[in-house]
Amino acid sequence: MPTFAAIDIGSNSCRLAIANVEQHRIKVFHQDREVVRLGESVFETGEISPDAMANTIRALKRFQKAVQAQVVDRVRVVATSAMRDARNAAAFTAWVKSATGWTVEVVSGLEEGRLIHLGVLSGEPGARGKCVMVDLGGGSCEVTLSDNGRIQQMVSLPLGSVRLQQEFLHSDPPTADELRQLHIYIEREMRKLERKLGKPNVPLVIATSGAAAALAEASQSGFLEKAKAKVVRAGKKSVATKRVASKAGHLEADAATVRKLANRLAKMKNSERMVVPGIGPKRCEIIIGGALVYASILERLELGGFRYSPLGLRDGILAQMLSDSDERASVHRAVEQERWEGVLQVCRRYNIDLKRADAVRADAVKLFDALERVHGMSADLRELLAAAAMMNEVGKFMNHQGHHRHAQYIIENSEIFGFSPAERTIMSAIARYLGKSRPDGMDRPLRAVPVEMQADVVRCVVLLRLAIGLNQNRATQPVQVNVRVYPKRVLLELSAAKGGAELEQWSLKKEAPYFREIFRRDLVVELA
Image (cartoon, rainbow, N blue to C red; front, top):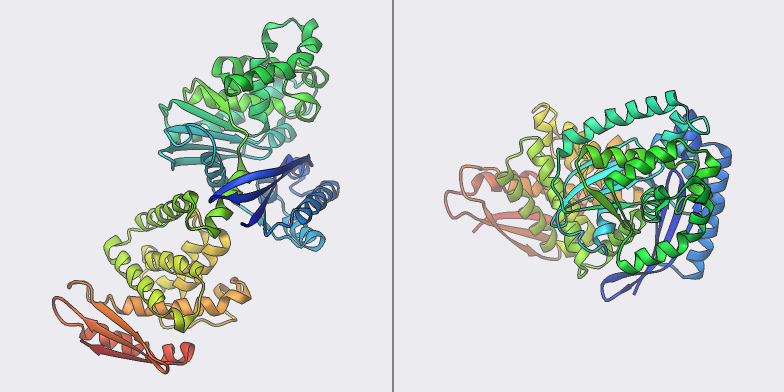
């Protein structure tokens, strides 16, 4: 079975997880983490500092040794908030490529939230019921409302611990004015959160990331009840306290305790915070902003508290890799459903006739399967072709004239759950060339597609043009097509239960010269 490695380049730390696949499930057997503070300079100057780059490269090279030692089959490297904001992100990704050979994928805030949701679902008890998931990292905070394993709403907010520390908290301890400005900023983002999620009445709140772990352990340690003189003793007791909490089930924190803890930490010096149970020297400098955000989220959404989960982005990356490689895995079905819901959401947003779109999709998939010996494409293209078929008319929402160009722009720049930016680029290129124009290697849409995929995009364009040709007459029932493949020609036999299929025959015959150009076979269209 394959071995996967997931690397999360966050704003505060880099994380590595290596896993095997056992009985269609992910089994993590190696993990590593290093604090690199990649976002520290980004949130202050807009660029990643040379020191932060060098620290991250050193961490990635160490991760690479572990990856090579475990003979990993596939590595996926994902970067989040700091890389999204950095002006010099391209220079850093080029350095990573040169030093390790890895390609860094910078994901959006919503895609980051989707992967976290997928990771938590893979192993957290109760996560498949109705719940709220909160992940507060170094640069952003993703809040997800989930029900029955599906994302209902998601919000990505610029409320990461490192970001807030760099932008607002410059004194030790923070001054009253710094805290006031921070509270105003958090309150503004909370209004956005409440508008999107309302007051979700959920039985469970799951919080991930280091800030949640630190707050949960500090809350359960009894730190707030101890006198200042006993802080050091409380710190020595933290390990035992955490062990007891783990035996009981989970690390948890209620809303009232989180608020009290956040207010208390904001008044303490850095040297005092570092001995608080669960916080320590690596998180003491950035915990104040994270604590205040967690307290505000719980209060604004009227949530009773949260349960900490060690699962997160890297687990979601591993689950996505399993889904991509194993169709028998349960996560594959979940991801497929998520992708389909994402496509339907785009179609509804742009007023697409779903019945018509689904008929085009069905014919495109049927042609893909029937002509497999002719086009020779991998199964991955089948799903991208189906999605492009569903969304090929979204450009008409902007303007009927030139709508294929508009469709290409909309698909490429829309957030479609489950599809990576590279996959959206391929889908958008397929939808682009359905009018009079033909794919040209010099066109920007095709240049954006990896060179090794450009020929497949052209083949998909031909199949989608045929599928659209099969759905010309909307007043009648869909035309049925029977495909026969011969050494030098492909025969399409058309039949219609009601009315004729002459219009479809005429439309398909117009595509015959282009079909011949791409597949080197004649296209013959006959009425049954």
